[in-house]
Image (cartoon, rainbow, N blue to C red):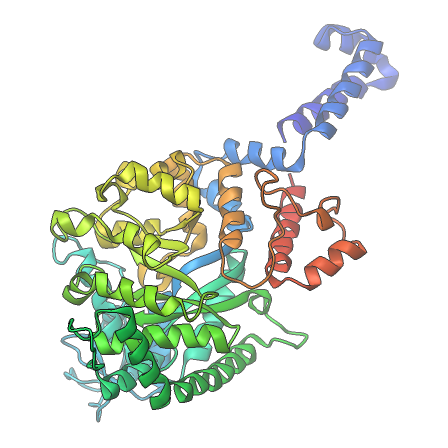
Length: 548
């Protein structure tokens, strides 16, 4: 834009008062002969034309870097690719939960802000168990619920961010009943507003059916090796057989039917397929089955198995992840067991993708020895292709060697800046984002729980740009990396070994600005959902950068 402004000013100076003596103006103000003026205009036009739209967007980005309002406006419109680390329930804002809890005729315990199924007290007096509907007339209760169900107005002096954050889920949980489809619609709508093309949602989609089955089958598997039952791959194989024979296929079928219903509701809310279709209809949603790793081991095993089974049975489930606070007793005590379970079961499902929370920890939250192996075990034993958070990576044994291994294996880290700040108090120079990029580890920004954190993807980009001085090119690389490391099916638009984001031969010569693609590229895109979403991102970048 700077070159264009210079050209406009120069052109004006060279042409003003054409009839009345522009020669004098040119000589006095520009100190150029008329031919020199014409020559300079020609040079400016050529320079401006040679500068790419991406370069112009990058220059504008740098020009507003220190103006928070203009920087946010710029980043709001930037295409952002995918959000690979987002929990469905945590993505919903508390205001929506109040509406859904009201529709579900739930009460709230005024003292704890927990939703409960009960006979509610009337709204006309200060009671301990009012209907959630009372919040619409009681602004104090309404504000209390938002504060209790999110990080709004949280005070570190009164409660740790870690404890307040994780306590929200048990408070608003019942509001999700019968409203998963509405939640999908909210996530898709906000993703569209943030100019995301793709979202992978972590979702415990079975309503605890697998955990219940795991309790029924139990943990004892009749090991003949003389070791502790459940400690060998053979034991895990036998337990898998028992669960499959005991009704796991019924759980899979139930999950698929429920997801059909939930997605139908999402499309209804967004008016998809109609003339009034909302922008969220264009966002591709896929799912990671969410294993609750803080449960007893037989329930965790059953849930991990369900995660594998769902990815085999339904293409909408593209992988699984283990959730719940990493510092809780069971996740810490059973961490090695969980990794061995995944390692053993992965052999039956070699095509299943795995992304794991690892090192969402910090010094003092657990003993030092608890920080030394979670990322490495997740990658080397469980085969994780992506790592969620990775905040304490520099506390791992041989951290530099681990970073080099992650770069070599192309393991992406899902960076959740806001979440790491409010939960762990890790931000700025203490956050390992610059270390990951220094050692060539691929990274992508993610929201984690944007509803609870009261954030969105635009503000993750804003935080990254302001805190770490990232360039437009670096943010663009992260957006592309998010889709390249997604678990969406199909071949990549990017050719291996072609340098950074060089397109495959079939689409190498295509102009993303064109409405049509050639036969070879069209055929390639038709065969790969991944490539289609990546092409959509490139089209979005082209349209965005044109304005500069």
